[in-house]
Image (cartoon, rainbow, N blue to C red; front, top):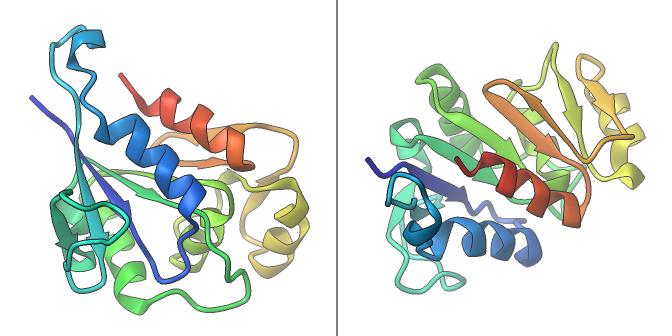
Length: 171
């Protein structure tokens, strides 16, 4: 059975990490899989409109994140802002429904804003680790690892570590 991976394309999503996840999960590599299947990648946008970054990729809205097997949140360029309320609600609903949730690089700030990292270990880019720890004191920020797999919620350090985390998610 194909797992559905939702790429949460928030307003401040950065292209590089978005492209990493799209390359890992959106290119059919069923011939490499022991099950003979690969992932179904969907672009998740605030209103479910198709993403210009991922033409031809099916789209869903943030309200549908709970229907996915895995949600990947790319890095954000706005570390001080408050992410879209619908995205935060969708991430919490996805967690409650049992989805895996992965943040790439500074996408950890989005997960922290949703409350998903409280009481958990998390990674982000080393340049922003202190800022994440100050802003969200309930998060055990690790600045010396490539990624953290804390069960249902996963986070990566910098840009290249985002690729490592995406490959770790492949099974």
